[in-house]
Length: 182
Ligand code: IMP
Ligand code: MG
Image (cartoon, helix red, strand yellow):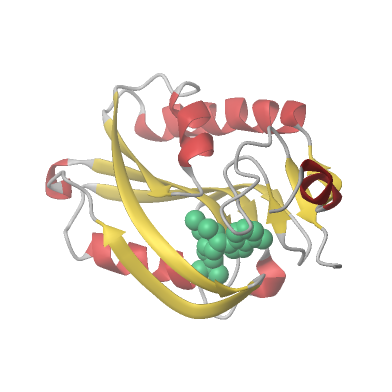
């Protein structure tokens, strides 16, 4: 990134506002509370993209909640998925003792979640629920759908609220369409 002007030019238009995100997270928190009905959960953030979402979601949940982190790297050529997913940091908890709720930023091809869900299910958690902030159903390559998704979006590459392009834009408070033009 050469300059602030170049940076700002990449933000094409806002797709989901901060206010819409806040309201949807409140609702998702209520759904999780109702689902677990007072039972403690382990909320797992898939890094890096879901760190912002998880920080807000954990504060919308009232059941006892521990947090855990896993780092999955999805390799991209520019804005196109290469299909290579690597777990670069694993959970420290023995999840056989937990009701696990995975917080993910976005489901596109679904390769990342498919791999992570398979991995975690093999460890026999008490239960497993997947919550995603964004869902791009038109990008699916693998037959997998999250249990709760807050927003369904068209097949654009998006940035902000944890999501990056080349590691930038994660700190935008909203979700925006990325400008792929030079
Ligand atoms: P999937 O494996 O194709 O479902 O993609 C999963 C991961 O790729 C997500 O957790 C994101 O980190 C990243 N990703 C997918 N689509 C986008 C996007 O539009 N913008 C930024 N990151 C994305
Ligand atoms: Mg991610």
